[in-house]
Each structure stands twice: as structure tokens, then as C-alpha cells.
Length: 180
Image: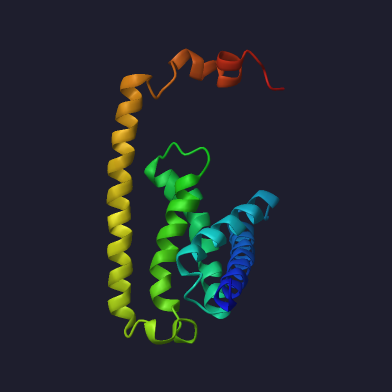
């Protein structure tokens, strides 16, 4: 561990806090009030957004990335999820997928010569294209592997429960319990 590791720790905390705040503000504007779940989801969004950039951005870059990430991930969980009619009860894509994409792309804008020294990108546009290529490759790989894994699981054991089990709920049909 050295100063770079300490700096990565600081920017990680800043991005998480900034995203929690921006999520709460966005939630207040959209829903009329913020929530504890929103604050926690915002903090997770900030952690996801800063992950690709933690060793490359300054504290001010982490602050900006967190603020942007909190708002965009809120939209990912509320607006995008509805628009795609996604069955994502844990909001994994809206938080981790959208947050990772946003973080990877924003890294091009906030990568700092102060942190990276001679390894800093010369031009934002060329680095942005590199980041977009990485995002597209990750999306393609993830989609292909998810499809393959789901097809194998469907062949081996099925990936959906029966409609009657779904209607009465998994607590009762799978576990014999009723949650009151």
C-alpha cells in the first residue's frame, strides 16, 4: 500500500457520499421525499461509478462523478427499468450496470494528470473512445455469457417457476411459510 492506495480510498468515500446526496435530492424532487433505502442505494451507486476511476481521478473528479452517478442510477432504477419492462427485483442492472457504464465513460473526462502523471490521456476524445469501446465489449461479453448460462440452466432445471407458484408467492409455494 502506498499513497495511491490511500488516495483511491479517499475518492471512493467521496464518490459514495456525493452519490447518496444526489440520489436523495433527485428522489425528493421526483417523489416528494428522500428515503433511507434511497440514501443507501445512492451510496452503492457512487461506489460502482468510482470503481473504474478510483486510481485515476482527483477528489473533485470523484465528487462530480458521484453527483452524476447518483442521479443517473436513480433514473436507471426508476425510468429505464420501467421503459425496458425489466424483471429486476434487486435493481442490479439499474445500479451496477448503469453505474458501471457511467463510471467507465466519466473516467475519460475526469482522469487527472495530477494522479496519473505521464500516463494521463493526452486527449479526452481519444480516451473517451477507448472507454466506450471497453463498455461495448463488456456489454457484448456479458450479454453473450448471460444468454449461454441461462440457456444451460433452463435445460438443466428451468429458470421460471410455475404460474400457480408465482400467483400464491414463493414464500408459501417454495418454503411453506406465509410472511405477515
